[in-house]
Image 1: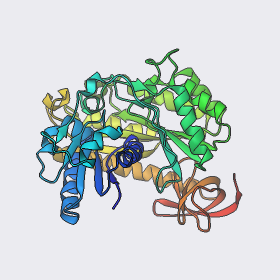
Image 2: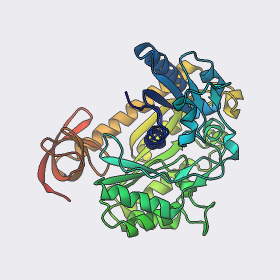
Image 3: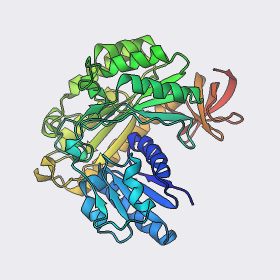
Image 4: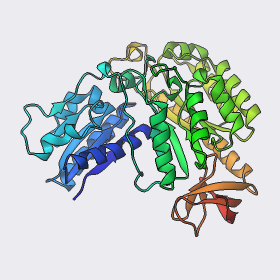
Length: 421
């Protein structure tokens, strides 16, 4: 039995789990489950605990190490679980030495080994050669967050914003591209805040331009969730100037109502979002947008919710990631007048239905189109706009020019035309 990982939450966690596995194996661990948790909602924490209990029932002899954002902000509650052998903080989970007590059977006086994340000032650029079972690879460019949105616990799980040096990012992408990955996804906690802590204060846009310039053989570069208000001129130039940057952006939107956005302590208003998507679409008409949205935020009334519901159509959002508001202890929003949870869930349902309609309409619009599809696994790939396509007869990692011939559920159906790479 080797080291296994169980990952919850964001793309950054997926990347970090690969590094954790490599570091734990470097430390000599065997027969260990590493659980990388998420704290963004109470439900995410509940699911992690449920999975830990199940893992202990299924494999009673296996050591279980818990880490990630939920473990960072709720270290003691995970440490108090009888099923857990060790709790490691986010600052230490990608260091081999953190796992050595388990390697040598050293008894820990306290199985909770979590340090002060707010004291962390650097993010190492860990090198990975592959990502198990994936045709695309995630590369961490940034960690932490200096903003204090009133609903969010993540800064206390991740610490202050800090950036990976450009040279390290580019070197890792070169290595991954050389190993056959056709698509790289830049990820972080707040990647549009990239760079102020580095010499020369580069921006995310400058980083994207440098990657595209220095890794000419990389077919596809994708950006994960961004805060559009922080987009710089270099990022706009990259979006409009290099088609290897994928026409798909996921916005940290959260609400479409100005008063709720102010109470969330966001830095944009609904007009800023509409201006951003219009400017980007003027450069790349094929660009599609997703968005994170919170339904039932404290004080949200029907009119405020309707403003959020309308922005789905006004901004022509294709992918929605909708959360019913979940109060996180210690955040300002948890002390605000709460919206009834049933109302929040009903509003989330209406938002998801609106998103489903827009997604279905977008898929229907692609029938007859010629798409470049990255094969992810047996009979499935994704377009540049991130739509899944059913396509048989091609190897994982291959990029195939594909004619879209129909829609089945949430998938497009395609027929290969010729190799696109």
